[in-house]
Image 1 (tube, rainbow, N blue to C red):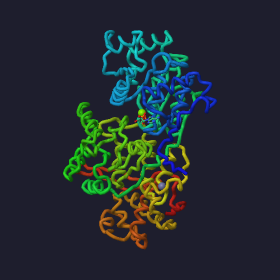
Image 2: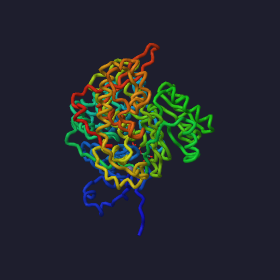
Image 3: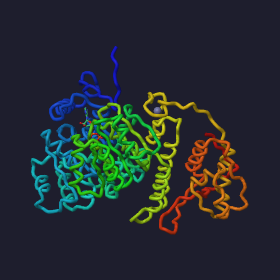
Image 4: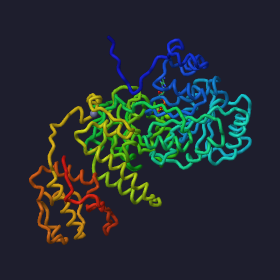
Length: 557
Ligand code: ADP
Ligand code: MG
Ligand code: ZN
């Protein structure tokens, strides 16, 4: 008997036409396999790759949902160099990120495959190199363009029409297709113009690929691209080799110690919220003897390239970065991804942690949680800096996403995968986790506690505080509910309230958990109020949601 180790994706041996009757019917199967070996030096397909390739060569629209690292690029690079089916001509690949394109083009050139990239930076001019080569008859089979170039460049449009007229437009590929959906976490305006492709270039197959589509976003992408009759290829998003955990937020020097004890010399990423945080974080790690550099959007392209190369080639061990360090990272042996600040959504968290363990080996995803950070993020959503306020609907969506993160952090019993995979419309069986998350690995001796009485006391206390217009922080409220430090509250005008200490019989941790739950369930809310010195603080209020009257409130923790 053999034991198979399942990694994030299954690799299926290349089926011979004799084995799979369906494939025997595709006249171009032999060509696909031959080019897989010759150019990509691969012997097997991963889940859904062959299906995607065959379908697009048959001229069908295809929607590919595949986790990060699953091998989406091959799904369009391979058919692009084939001639069979509807493949002859140029495959146009719309990709949102310069670095991503450069990586791919370089990679293809090394394999002896010609590819060009056309970015908004390249000015329209008849003599531009891209233009010249694309009108020549021995043009490359792959042309990468940014969505902005597609939307705004007259020259790009002329070229596409020319190719279309001459039957030389093999297909459109929309990589990172979640950018077309406002449900995605990376919505890009220029992507919307891609909705015109079907009408402008009728008969040209479209392939859309993403790793992040929630069911809502997937529908959105398909509708926006007008590919309702597409072949949908989807696989489980569970990354079996990633270990997820949440820990109370620690300082960088302790994180350095954790790295040295658990991942000495191994590659990793630490995500911080701010550019400054990335810089100081990297410096603190260096002070602890760890080779670390920072990466954020405030750096020049050149600087970013240099630190990326250093990290990719293991000259630096740890990249301390904002989420600007993202799409297109292709390093197989990232052994840990640490979030020093909580992410903005679980969808984003899945993406960011997905950069760990692409080689299938065990890797750690550790989220450092402090409610204080959640509050900072709430504030950024409600009052974005250097930017016009967001439309209310967007604010509501982003707050909802953040609340899911906070709930994830506060949950000490549920499997982490259940939370994460729910976002991809997957119902995950807890036992399939195989102790690869903190909650499954160390099941707490949990027992349900009816906290309804305490919850009601807490809410009526905050109601009194709200009515009396007293500003009270979480810490002050927790203390008061346990009967401590009530004098300043009385001085601030909270007269007539007498139930201080209503929760003093319960352990402190339990009351903290209760407060977190009340915030998550939007029964309580926090308001940022600026004080005299220009700093703003978060103060508790009873949420204005009419749904939650305290006498309807039950709380089981
Ligand atoms: P994605 O875009 O889905 O995140 P990539 O296309 O960048 O993933 O591929 C991730 C890695 O998987 C690359 O290193 C690629 O070479 C590798 N890969 C893709 N397909 C296969 C395959 N059939 N067999 C082995 N490795 C593969
Ligand atoms: Mg990709
Ligand atoms: Zn689990």
